[in-house]
Length: 319
Image 1 (spheres, rainbow, N blue to C red):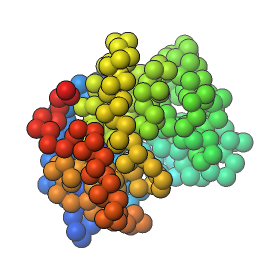
Image 2 (cartoon, rainbow, N blue to C red; image 1 turned 180 degrees about the vertical axis):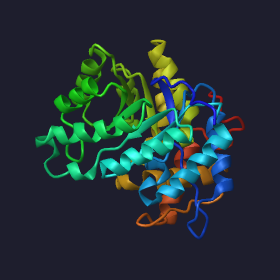
Image 3 (tube, helix red, strand yellow; image 1 turned 90 degrees about the vertical axis):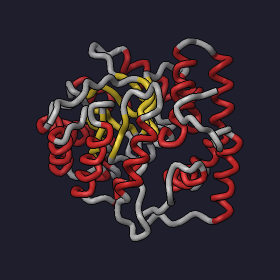
Image 4 (spheres, rainbow, N blue to C red; image 1 turned 45 degrees about the vertical axis):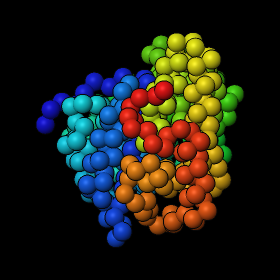
């Protein structure tokens, strides 16, 4: 197998959805089409698989390997592939990391362990040990997934310590969901002797997040609106606030459609959006997710129309 493509923790990195068939098996044909759809967007810097957007919590390790194999067949050699490492146990996480490296991943997105939910903030050495175990298994660049403090988020001091001591941590995917903490993390991680990038996943307030100095974004919404995300990121980087605001206005209807409560339905909703846009055949999801109501599906369709996405003939261009 060819060596992984070089990975730069910057720019727009869509997290791909995973289509299922009516019997809830992986829809391989649908997934191939989706991968190529997303990969065709001009200006994205990588894609992410086996993460929240692909309902990784419902996928076996063998299914994750199959997802990665299909991904490499379709887009390997064209774009770097970030592979999620989703496991509560550090040894299984290390095994997933080794397999991902073997299969051609260019970087790894490391989810926090649910073991840290009850008192993890009081035992920072546990979080450090989790990353150290993964580091021993692979030389691939690591992206630390930072959650909100009320869930599995690392205290900023722990976050900085991990980034200092684990030499392959090159970025965080920041979902702290607190603007003040978000800015602090950007400033402190950028100021480290070995600068660590910040990739926003604050997709419901993306413009506000990006102008704080993020190096890019990594988001499941990129499975639907990657072209708009690229245009917005480029406008912010260019200092063109007027254009950034115009693009944020286009994106705004999608944020409610995807991220309004209950937040857990976000990727369920993104699948319905792609069905409406003709980019996915069906929006099957695995339990415990369940089919959305007809009323909500109609609301999602209206939001896609309001964002000007319906009827677009070229997904990779933004007017």
